[in-house]
Amino acid sequence: MRLQLALNVKDLDAAVEFYSKMFDTKVNKRKPGYANFAIENPALKLVLFEVPDAPERLNHLGVEVFSDLDVVKATNRLKEAGMADLVEDEVTCCYAKSDKVWATEPDGMRWEWYRVLEDSPTFSGPSC
Image: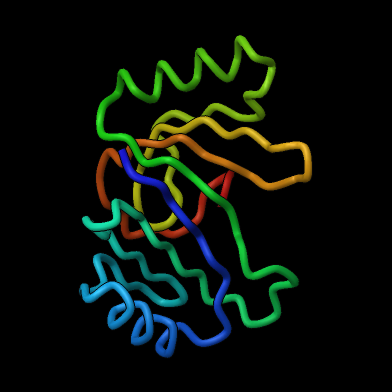
């Protein structure tokens, strides 16, 4: 598992250059207005959305897991706690098809627990 940090950036090229150097790694996926890094050390999925007019720099937070069972466990745990806002199976978002569950913390920050199933040529979906 690794923590996901999704940021809104003004200039995607500048942000990709900065974070490539910051974490000494290459971009994992690069599409128009979007990039992500799958960083091994520290275990971090850094996602960049080019949104020049975004009122907030932080887009959302997440936890990427690597098995179906981990998504099911997170979904059940969040449902039992009354925290699951949205459950999505095989949804396309951010150029990937994923299974995920969303929760919103008390101050409004969105969190997702998700597993990427496969790459997709399409960016958006219901939760994007």
